Image (cartoon, rainbow, N blue to C red; front, side):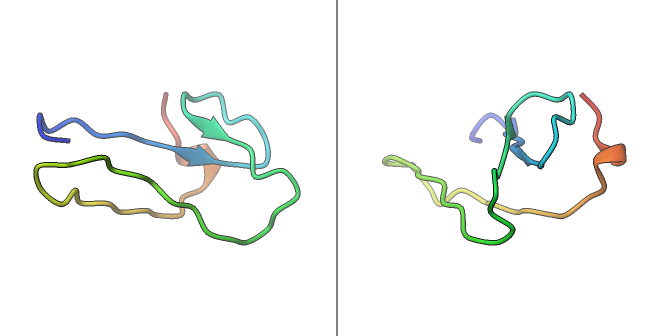
Length: 57
């Protein structure tokens, strides 16, 4: 984000105990989109796969 902050979204089949958790239900693959409305510049987006045990709240 412009102020240097970040948004973290966690996709997991079971509640990992962190904010912004999304359950994929029965889907084991697929796509996800994030919409940016009129940004002043192109946002940098990244994703990574990590073990649930490595998450911190």
